[in-house]
Each structure stands twice: as structure tokens, then as C-alpha cells.
Amino acid sequence: MELFNKYKNKNFAFITNYINSCVNDDSLALTEDELRTQLSGASQSSFEEFLLALTNAYDNIESYNANILYSQDDLMLPLRQIPIPVRTSIAEKAWLYYILQNSKSDLFIEPATKQKLISALENDIDQSRYPIKSEYIDFRSLSPDNKLSITNELSVNFKTIVSAIKQHRCLFVTNTTFSGQIYKDQEVYPYKLEYSAQFDSFSLSCYPLDIKRPVKMNLSNLSAVKLGDEIVDYNGFLSDFEKQLKNIKEKVPVSIKIRNQAEAYDRCAYLFSSFDTFCYDKGDDSLIMNIYYYRFQKDEIIRNILFLGHYVKVVSPKNIVDEVVSNISAAYNACC
Image (cartoon, rainbow, N blue to C red; front, side):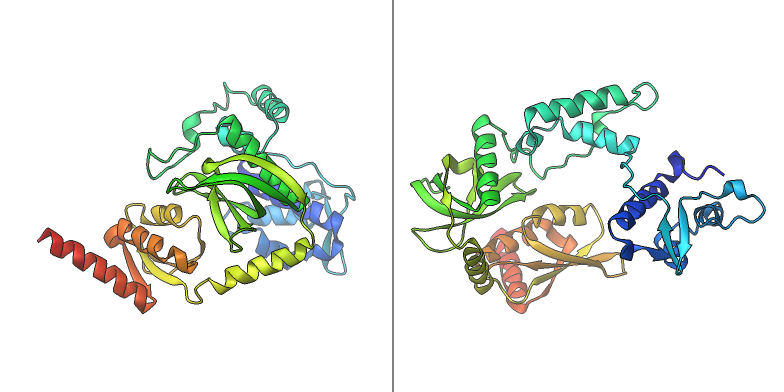
């Protein structure tokens, strides 16, 4: 058989990662039974043949054996003792090519590196045999009004903030709030950058020294972002910051039941993309999403739930259920 071909790329990727993992740490080696479990392909007619070749178990046609793994103390170890270059598929190359066309990629990749990647991809892929089309990559947004403009100023500010977080340095920022209030040259300790798919926006989670509490600043509202000095006792800052966040975080998440219809789950994923969530399949064509939030985010969560309509039901806690019911009743009474 042909052990690896374009129809079995997942097996190729698995074995590549497996060998590279074992080369770095042989304690990650699996037994033959564990390999069978990991390679979830039992429904393939050629799966057993693939495993025989992989584990060198062909008796009558020895040339079919792959000879890339050997058994030692019941573990399947790689013969090759140096890492294998990771091979990307046509689909992965197409995805990367069109992701690089998105202006957000400028925030994460230097211009020279980006151009080198684009040129390599254009030369590597035979577009006559494997045509690449932009519509193959699904960029979704909830509203055409939410479109982040990657200006040169935003790009510079973004990279300055990343440098400050990496180097454990403070920042001096000028922040114009949504209400129009301006905080000029405000000294802040940066915690992390966050992205919201709902609003297509980046926010800086930080600790301003003048107000002494965690805040979020929208990057589109920041100007004159400058690096400051290294933060003294950075680990202490992180510990105190996370302790303050924990104190204002609700202990009980909002639990909602989502009917798996009309892309309701996709819309939930977008609306709650900036929250910590945990989802699982309830088994009756519905999903449960637990949303963990801070006290000041309660109104936003209720607005999002109301926006989703009858495809979503609030399961708990009772105070959120009561507020959603109250909002719906008030809207109904106003219409009548």
C-alpha cells in the first residue's frame, strides 16, 4: 500500500508529530494499542493495513513494512533520531495565504517576513491543479458596522504594547474613553491584549497607577503609546492583579441552553468570544454554554442573550433568569 498519500494526510501529520515528540522526550512514546486508539481511523478499509505497515507487522510481504518505528519494552519508538520537518497540506497553505491577505496579520508579522511568506506560497502551489480562492476562507462578522481599521498608528501601538508585556515594562498611554473623557500620559502596567470577535476589536487589560484597579482600554481609543521602565517585582504585580480580578469575578457562571438551529451556536460563540466559556453537547440537538464573567459584565451578557432570541434559554443562575424574563415582559408590555 501507499502508506501516506493526500487522502491520509491526517495520518502523516500524526506520525510526524509523534516522531518529533519522541525525539524530544522518549517518555511520550506509546504502546501499539495506544497508537491504535490515537489513530482514529478504524472505519477505513485500509486502516488495519496501515497499522501493520506502521508497526512492521507484515509477515509475508516484508517490503510493505514502513520501518519508521521499532518496538522496545512494548513502546513504539522512532528509528529516526532527529526531528522531521513539518509538511503542510494544500488546504493549510491556502488558509495561510489568505490569512496573510487580511490586514490584521500586519499586527503579528514583520512586513519583510510577510512578503517572503506570500512569495513562497505563490511559487509553491500549483494554482492550475489546486486553485486557491478567497471564498474558501470563511471570515464572519456579526455586523458590517464592526470593522477594525488597521491603521499605521494602531499597528505601532499594538507592537509597542506587545513589547511592554514581553519585557515586563510599564506604558504611558493617552486614552479617550467612549464618553469622551481624555486621560493623558496615563501610566499603566499592561496585563494582556484581548480580541473580541463580536466587536472586531482589541483591548488592553491593564492596571492604571492613578486609579489603582484593573481596567480594559480599547486599542482604537489609545494614542501616544510609549514604553516606560521595567516593572519592579513583576511577578508580584501579576499576582495582585489576578487576585483583584478574582475578587470581582462571579463565582457562578451563567448557563445557557442553545438550540442547534439557524447558526445559533455560531452566533453565541461570536457574542461571547471575549468571555471565558465552557461548552458541551447535551445530546438532544442542543448545547450548554457556561459563561464566566465579572460583575461589571452582567448587563452585556443579558443584552447578548436577548439578542439571540428564542434559540437560547437561560438555565441558571436564578437572578439572571429573572432579569431576562423581566426584560422580555417589559418589551412585550410596551408593544401591547
